[in-house]
Structure formats: C-alpha cells, structure tokens
Image (cartoon, rainbow, N blue to C red; front, side, top):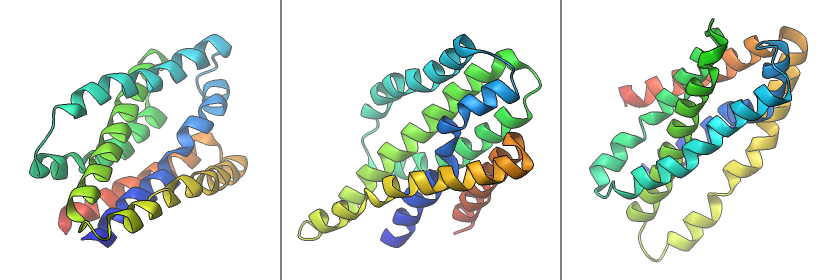
Length: 173
C-alpha cells in the first residue's frame, strides 16, 4: 500500500506538473495570448490553491481522503481537456480545475501516508516524500524535449495521457 502511495506521489508530478512551466509556451503558441493572457492563466492555477486548502481542511476521515486520490484521474483528464479545448476563453476555467485536482490529491496523499505509517517510521517515510519535487525538473526537461520535436500540444497530451492511464490502473487495483 505504501509503495502505491509513493508512486501516486511521484508519477503525476513527473508527467503533469510540467504544465505550469510549459504554460508560457502553450499561451504563446496555442492560445496566441500575450503576457496579460499568461497572467490570467497562471492566476487561475494559483487561485485553486487557496480555495482547495479551505475545502480539503473539511475532509477528515481516511476513507474520504482515499477517494480524493482518484483526483489524479481528474488532474490528467483536465489537462488533456486543456490541450484539445477549442474555446480559448475556457482555458482559465480548465486550469482552475486542474490546479484544484492537483492540490487536492497532493494534500490527501500526504495525509494518507502520515496516517498509515507507524509512528516509529513516520519521520523516515516523510523524509522521502520530497523526492517527487526533485522529479519535477526532469519532467519539465522531458516535456520540453517532446515539445521541441512534436509541439506543445502533443507533449502535454502525451504526458497527461500517461497520468490518465496510471490513474485508471489505480481504479483496477
């Protein structure tokens, strides 16, 4: 169970968190919006942090937090919707949903791990959790390399599709 939770903490960060960094390229090449449009897109992601911190604070039992982990699927799916979205004005709303899903699953995951680990091992296990932060730059490098060859839409779709496939495999387990 703990190994599965560690995978849930690592894979979506590697494959999905690069959307924030590639947002400037996506805004320029796909949405054709300038600095003001990019700031609107970025703020849509940031607003979700505040709202979702308040919402997630009200979820207290372990079972409901376990269900929140299924938001990994929503995270990948909303990023795919962003890539195929034909209406540029919907991009901030989609990014708001993606940010909410990412924040919610990440908070729930940390809480689940802390609740499931025995007290004598909690410090050691939690010290390994920042590994997913170290994978963030590697995911950006991979997404940037794919973007250079196949375009930003394809790169995002491929990375986000991997998250969706991973999340669907979690549903099967």
